[in-house]
Image (cartoon, rainbow, N blue to C red):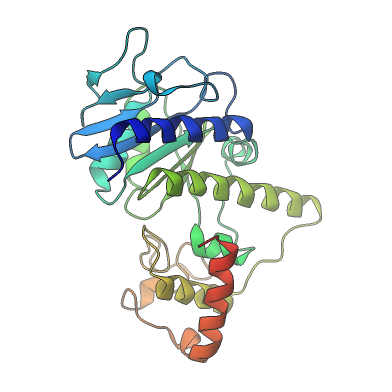
Amino acid sequence: MVNEFELKKQICEIGRRIYNRNMVAANDGNISVKLNDNEFLCTPTGVSKGFMTPEYICKVDKDGNVIQANKGFKPSSEIKMHMRVYAKRPDVGAVVHAHPTFATSFAIAGIPLTQPIMPEAVIALGCVPIAEYGTPSTMEIPDNVEKYLPYYDAVLLESHGALTWSTDLLAAYHKMESVEFYAELLYKSKMLGGPKEFDQATIEKLYEIRRQMGLPGKHPADLCMNKGKTNCHNCGGSCHKTTGSVSSVAKSASPEVVAEITKKVMEQLGM
């Protein structure tokens, strides 16, 4: 098990990554890691995430109250948003909030990331909805994010930024990278006349690959909140069958073909 000091160093490293990749500016963004059901490490307010050292990192309880913080540091004002994720998703071990430029542009424009345009995005993210606007540092943001937590592992925050979560810190950060890369590709493809989307049969094949890979988290391959909708990337037909079952579309591919595709996709995802 990684000790607290090592986790603090990891938080600082992820802070440098999001800063160096222009996912935050000045003192924007925040990061947290779950230690146990009542203890969490988090970044402080009012500091650049690109220049943190371990002594900057604060410890809070499940209500966001300070357990430990060095002089001059206090937890991020957005800690309420992180705590809501942990409360509703016990499988989550880390949360990352940032303002990546392409993804945030979609959030400002009110356009969710739901178009199925590349295998890696369909398998890793599913889709990324937009949580309705809330005033920063208030309960409005966690309240607006909450309804998406059972169904997704990433959301855009309307006119604000993006929020991702996963089993551990590196996985949560990689979700943020994937969201931004997906948004950038979608934006650029729109500049070229519009992306060519996968048809429903192709989406379902990719969903079946995800199921066979056994990836953690919530995803439309296994769970759907849009029952009754047709031709919807948020659904992919999974709401019309037993969760985790193999669809007739996926059955049409031989085990060898599915295994080979799975191998290639996992290589692309760095797994």
